[in-house]
Length: 490
Image 1 (cartoon, rainbow, N blue to C red):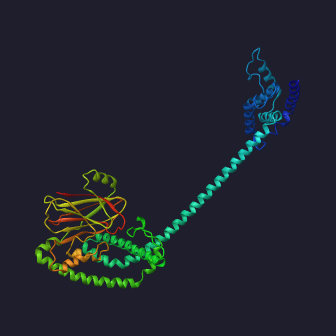
Image 2: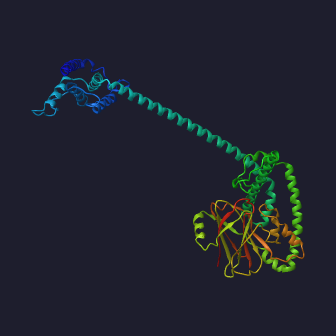
Image 3: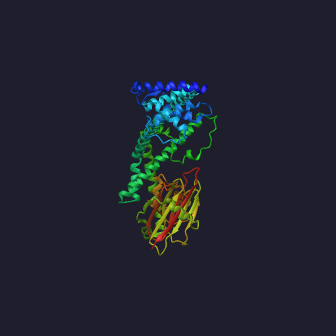
């Protein structure tokens, strides 16, 4: 009885929909919305709900299922057309009933059929409307989360851009301060370094300019290191109760990276009084060097004669260049017998003695390091080699090499050179054992050989021993790994 009653009421509903279709056909636009959803999306949700729960969560009569299927056919294929309808068998009762209910819908549009499917399912199943509300709330919540996430990402990007802009501005200000300080120091030391460069490379303006630039850069680094140490001492004096912790490698005085907080104090400390003091010191050093050179000339003439001195004074400049294949070079040197890899301790200086070869006319050298720079220079010892073997000597400083050559004595003004107190004592002492004169081919200064391979060559000035010096005396904490290779050209 319940099934018959439902069928009658449903049949009345379909009939009224069919009779009212022409009136409402023009009032349902394709983009109509219902319950907060586009009609097409709501119909898909309703059909999915019906398909999943039919016979499970919801139980509909035979007639109600026929009506829903009729709405589904009308929404998918449009009004019933006999030519497009599939052929039915004689015993296909269900197919015949479906076609009859489809015909009852008449000429209603597909949008009206979708809306009729939704309304009928809502009437027959009380769980359908809460399901749609849950889907809508979930959709709205997802949209809110996505919008919130987009806002957070936008704020994060803005903060990051602002932070980067601030860093760029701070870095620009620090760079300006560094340049102003370096320009002031360069003006003070230009004449001094120019005289030294002219003596090292006479008649070669290009080499002189390169040497002046390198010396000025090293002078700037040493000035900043001294300023950094002074600031540390002042802090320790202000806080005597606090024990200072040992400095790490990155903050060691030998490191080139100084705190930017030293720059304002450095600019204030650069006064005219310093220039006058430096000029006085330079004049005193020049007088001392002049007397030392005269003494050195007397020693040389006494032991070697004037002709022997003339043989080693004229030295052509060395040729130095770089190449980028540093990793390949390290691999090749490491694959050898191991003689080309040396660990230079902090504060040490390594001297590689390379005697001239009677069959050669030119020496070549190559070297590189891991991660850090190293001081490098080349001297020439005017003495007949006692062996043809290349030897390596390690010392805490350059004390083991006494030089009486005029060029070498002039390095008292070189910022890279160590103390020459022992050389002066050796020259001034008449009872000291005579040692072979030594001339500087390339002065010692720091090379950034951890990014590329440093290569050079020099034509033999005569018979003697080349002294390749690798200086790590300025480093308080770091040891350096050196890769080098030396050979000669016939």
